[in-house]
Length: 473
Image (cartoon, rainbow, N blue to C red; front, top):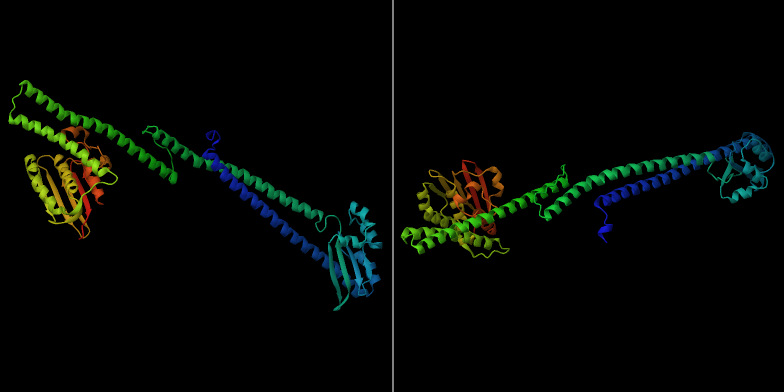
């Protein structure tokens, strides 16, 4: 039921981006409209104030000229810029001396069209007090020659209050402009959101598809994501992981075949010899028993490698650590291996420190060195040289094993420490081994907080560099 209504990532991204864009656009429009109203109201307040001050100035000028309120009232209707306002003037005795809502002034305003038709029907029966009741009253003192001669009261006319029709029309035009701009911004946000959602979701969908194929066992699946952003980096990492998994799977299959062969060869040989001896086909000579012993040693070596790899591969490898003079132990080991080099015709050179202490499992550490040296001997032809150099610094013991053998192709270098990997498949069985010797070296060294590295060129040889932390008593 849940999967039926599951929202895809593309829709989620689209909703989030589009929702954010529309919300921002809406808030922006509301804010613009609010500021527009505030600024427009301020503008109208200033306009009305300027008009009122002009009316007050005319009244003051008329009174200064005629010094008579009746004369001021008689001339006021011909000079005052009355538009949507009514005026009442009181003298110092609080008596009304001028009122544009009654008498000639009112008739004059109607005649000149300063009131709308609706206002005409209402104004005949409305007093100044009724306009004041609307709350749009402005009061100004009348000052002539430095003394107050009265008070002017100015009220805004009509149902529009202080908003004139042309002002309202202008404000509505601005609101429509803001609305249309918001709609255009919303449409643009929709288009950009669709593009952005597709840009984000498409690589993730591709990565999900590849992950599902990998989970189902299709290790050849690869993600096709272009670009240089984080998603492209993630795709490259997944592809690298898939490549490693595919490589590991191929190595496991190959190892199974190799181990089967490695086990079958000595077992078959042993069986053949024993049957031949039983049947009297072969004589039980010392040479025959030597050949049988070699096959048994070959089988034992393979089993020993597998057992040791299992030991160091556990989450908490069982080590028997102690202070070990690995430099001296290595030189003793090489002395014991010298006959093997002599027999094959390969020169062995040992240089460097005669003493260098580390803390670790002596048996495992010597096995790591043995594997490196044996590997160098195995791939070096007669007449070649294997060099072992030991350097002891204040913090590290460095053992370098170099040979003049066939070298390792550059494409194989990243994998030579992988289990079951052998860089020379065509000669894998002829050179012996199971392909886990270098993997075992890496596991042992890392279990002792060390590191192992390699440099190699085809037909020029290889150099392995083993680094372990020094032991400080």
